[in-house]
Length: 118
Image (cartoon, rainbow, N blue to C red; front, side, top):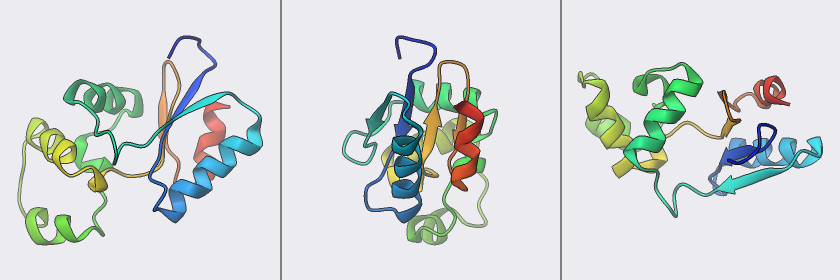
């Protein structure tokens, strides 16, 4: 992310909400980069950096409607660093879309959240 006004969207093309976030960015006219994190999973450092910019904990960015969550995580306690590793190993668990600027990030659901970065 070279310039302060450049945005990045963490996108899953299979997800209706993620596609809505992508469309919202396309309509904004802003320059942005698309990261398909299912194809190229994020690193531990990348997830931790996103969490700082989001000002959220790993549990806050988990998709609780995913089967993996329901079968393996629901009702159990995990430390933050353990959840980061789980997200990396199971990228579908990551809330989407996430839109990142140089200093801040937002979960783009609802898409209006993205406006705070524009």
